[in-house]
View 1: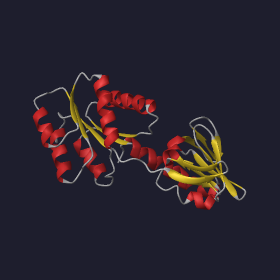
View 2 (view 1 turned 180 degrees about the vertical axis):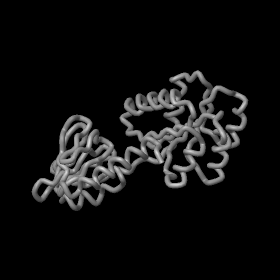
View 3 (view 1 turned 45 degrees about the horizontal axis):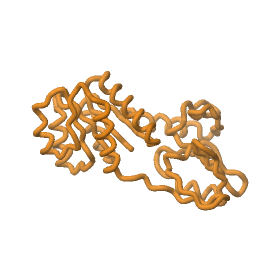
Length: 238
């Protein structure tokens, strides 16, 4: 689920992101969260990326406030849920004009926030599972669940948080199914999901759980750049 937080208070950004991380972990839901210090920063990103599942907005920001941003986005066919979190209740009626999912007042009640997030989740497009042929039978996995894909002879292995799956299809067949900027080839016969990469070095990378995987010399620069680009986007950098 891809969520944007638009608030000019860094402490509030950090607080909301921490609540989102807890909520996502409890629901075993991978989250991509980006924080923006103002409306203009989000619009800059919006010009390139339209696939946000939820936008969390403060209202009192300048020079373009959150309500003005919401109106502009609705005019530009932004159909995803909008959640206002603010210390001012006089804008509440205007929230209906932009079809806001909800309007929460500060100080934020965590139970209310969680309930609204659950509503937003029900409205978000669901990630499509991949159907893969394994020795145990047919399996269906979300792309975001896959940590890496590795060739082993004529077959391959897909690793997830819980286990490794021995596939009966070829590496090439499976690699074609792993699309998007999160997946990168780091050596021949090895594709990793950057979502779970903690460190990229000159000859290897390290996954979040400590496992180290090799990076070939010829692909080192490409892997490093893909890693930087992926996390810059997640953090909201232009």
